[in-house]
Image (cartoon, rainbow, N blue to C red):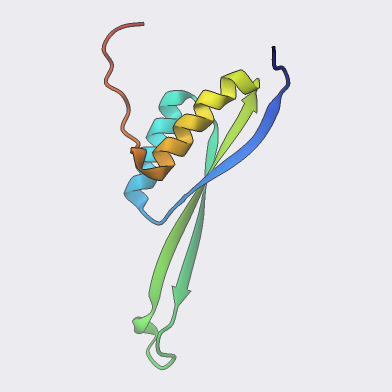
Length: 98
């Protein structure tokens, strides 16, 4: 049996941690994957009479662009899913083997 076709689309990685955004972008750059970081900033005033009481939050969505044959994309998607669900974003040590 054989499989052929072409898959194309985006997956989104979402976080509120700026350090995690740095780790994810370093990982994606090292893998040569195209991506875009989208930021949503919210500012909420807790008490209208006191603007200094405002609370702000940032949320990040990292849109990863994917396109290719299913056989090529499957391991990439599997790796992303494992890392998003607790696998971490550390890059493997370069053992000098090519």
